[in-house]
Length: 110
Image (cartoon, rainbow, N blue to C red; front, side):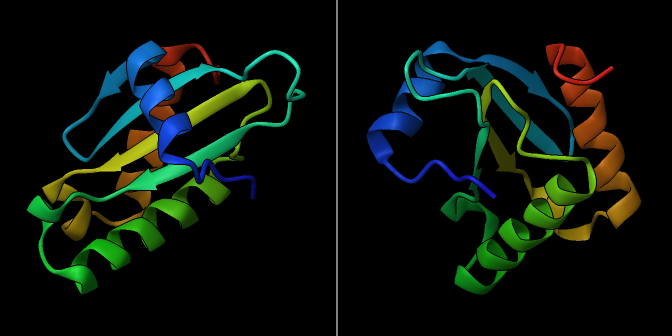
């Protein structure tokens, strides 16, 4: 899975991206930069407001699995998937539905 690792690239996505909010997750997506190819990349973010490191790491793991189940990363898009407090208690089906709803709203999935 292609990931966005540089904080500079994450900041660029934050500035330029279209956004989709759901009670469980927040999605941000922008087109991949010219010259880098069309392979999509994704980053998973869990802020300190969610809890300690164990909670944040678990949230990122479940988001990573939901992204895999939904076909991510998506060609032509750099995507940020941001955990919210409800991510901790959401079932895999709820995560998949929230992710797909966000992707449809952003025009990535149909």
